[in-house]
Length: 86
Image (cartoon, rainbow, N blue to C red; front, side, top):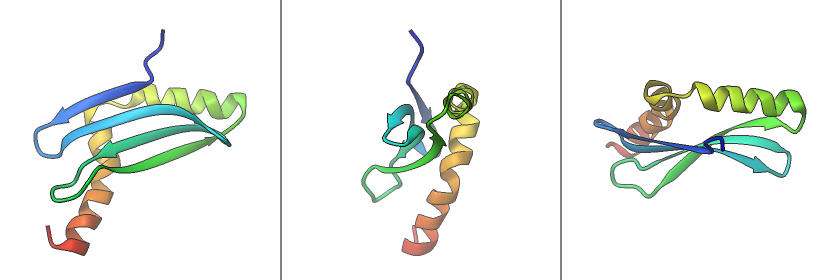
């Protein structure tokens, strides 16, 4: 059975959960993370509901390691820091 989730415990950014999921209009790779002082947040990359879209979603999900997970959530973390002074 193929994995549908990956959990990374980063020293600087805490836990980052990455999940491959089916949504109404195709596939989704979603990142869950918890900035300091906030609840759990999420961002996602969506893929169209075609064979090519699903293949791309699986390929993208399979390529995610800890460094790529951090790179994916870092812009959102920086936005929180800028907006809320963390």
